[in-house]
Image (cartoon, rainbow, N blue to C red; front, side):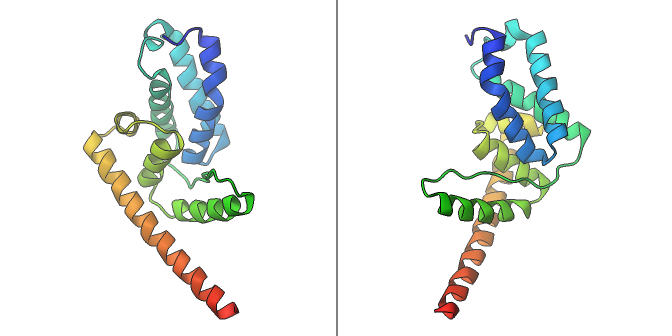
Length: 163
């Protein structure tokens, strides 16, 4: 049991909003979708608060709402790291690679790894089977590995020439 809706909202609104902004790359849509999802959670709070992961339910509602409102543009994820310079460089590399993903792959990666949703919630939010969500994530990660490996190789070549 989560407790009061107010506490749930205070703890979760910002992370939900940030994840939606990363997925939709539209602050207005992210805020609208988050507000709509939390409003629905409030309306059904007696049922929602008893769920194992009420915030997962909010993500599902918000993503579905946002997907109905607008096609998915690029996103800008943040990567946590101890070294601020490496964090910026890695974040920029990752952002550039994720921006190249197709919208469904970008959404799956954002929900699974930024929002830290379990696969079942990712599939639910995307309106597909768990196997489809896994397949989408696998394709996205394979593409990111290829893209990031290519980028690393080109950087190493540039660094070697500069020496």
